[in-house]
Length: 226
Image (cartoon, rainbow, N blue to C red; front, side, top):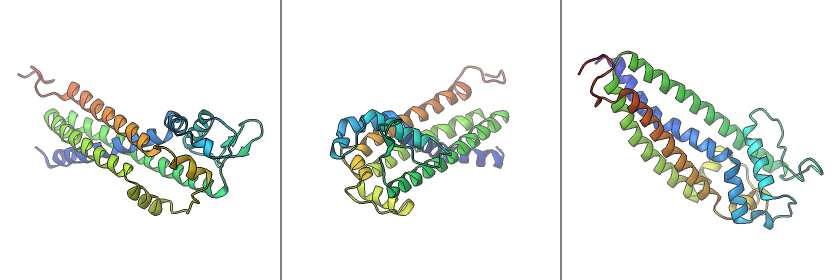
């Protein structure tokens, strides 16, 4: 086995849990269903003076976070009518920081995915089917472990606070709309559940595709040998 092949297989193992985590976290924090479920379950809007429904706010939040190039936070009460902004300038700055962080992490996730695909087919072209299969199996275990650790981190408020302080660091008043909306109820638990479910789905989708292509236990390999 060539050294380049061993290095490629090692990189596959490292990349798999990282790309899965980044993609799953992006989907979890951009999906309107996550915000809609949280806002309806927690009734958080009732603790504010906002004049809009949970679903309206959830859709607007998702639209903003999914708009990579928008230069304003277009989240308003009675969208299309009064157009009164929901969030203060400070809160909007925090949302911009969150969106930028998600966009950068998504870009990294896509780059890692392309690297994974490239290395996969590099090894496949070199007829290293068993090496690919073994690497992905190890990557699956690493991915599951990483998912558990990340899920625990998301569930722990001190860890979230430390991450917020280091990555965003903008002080937010406890009575601000943004603080009220996402401290009432179990927003991060909901995100955690969706993140974990998506991670497991992505991990086993990668494993399934790999097994279909590179399973060493099939009767004949692609070179026609026993």
